Image (cartoon, rainbow, N blue to C red; front, side):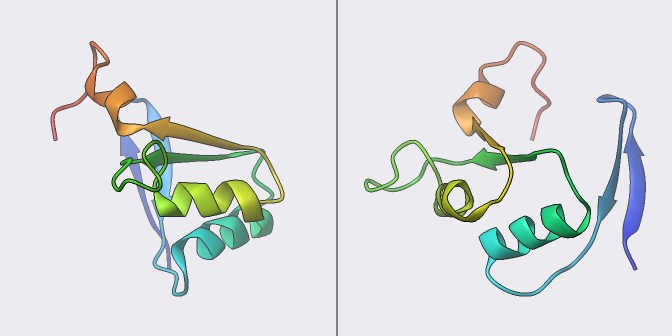
Length: 85
């Protein structure tokens, strides 16, 4: 059963659900089942091969059947209203 919540800072409602399998495929499958308009995912940008994108976000760009927006960690960290971690 998904956990639901509300982030007052972002004024966003969300659901949390634990799904097994490879991360990129699980995200793409959930987006398809829920008929999402797009997938928004963060990227840590670790590693030399994927200097800008993480492996999950990189794979999502290749397998998703809908638009994928990748937000690099540096964009969030440099935002003036970024939330502390």
